[in-house]
Picture 1 (tube, rainbow, N blue to C red):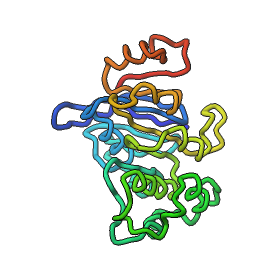
Picture 2: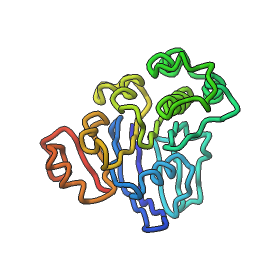
Picture 3: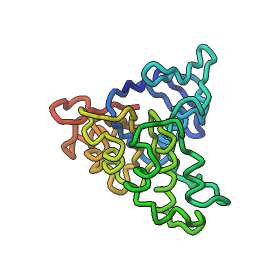
Length: 236
């Protein structure tokens, strides 16, 4: 699985986000403080935000090429996106919210309704009103709905559920021996658990600020200048 982000340029309120990155690992962590552009980057990949300039592709599927005025519609990208804010339909039950995102054509057991409900432990919530869910329960439902769409790329914006747990559920427990065709990309803030979550995300880390390089090195994680550890880091 290869996600290419070339020449991305996106004017934001406080600064201009510029990214050049080739992501080859099945699991990728994007680290940076609040307001560093992590969410905007995910939205650009998912097709929810139009960059000023970019060439974005996943393997052989071109998502965005502003030079050719080409943008693949969101529904055709096969990207599951889980935002930080609530995105469930309040007038539907949990079950109906999940069925709304189901890809009925997939035959992969990883994305079956029963499997997703089981590993996310939401079977007891299926008949609940979504307005009665806790914050954690709500996000588990949003993640489940994204998985039920059988995505090739799963984007999680600062999820409350550990990346290791989700990766195992979709067959990415071993990034070198993955049985899944789905890539996982997650954002993390530098506050809270921060650097310690790198091990649970994957073998590639994208930083949205250069000072993270020193923080990773101090924590014993790999940076571009320290290739003897297990992780690789690039700076967006």
